[in-house]
Picture (cartoon, helix red, strand yellow):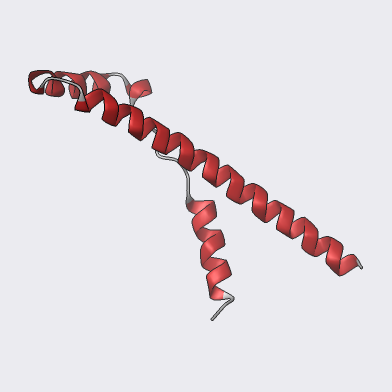
Amino acid sequence: MKGNYEQLIREIKRREQIEEALKERLKFETLLAELSAHFVNLPADRIDSNIEDAQRHPSSRPQRPNFSKLRRRNQSRNAGRR
């Protein structure tokens, strides 16, 4: 019985980590979609100045989400299947 409980706890933690990684990925993809929509609608002569503005204001730059937890989890899961 104790083994089942420990296994359940590990599974819950694994799912929480995956959920967090997916939230980060959604946040990144949403930001990417917003940036794409912004730049696709700009006239060609304003693209460079908008890029320069974004570079001057670090808070407006996209932050790369941390997918390492999800990647490590997938690698360890796949290693167990070999």
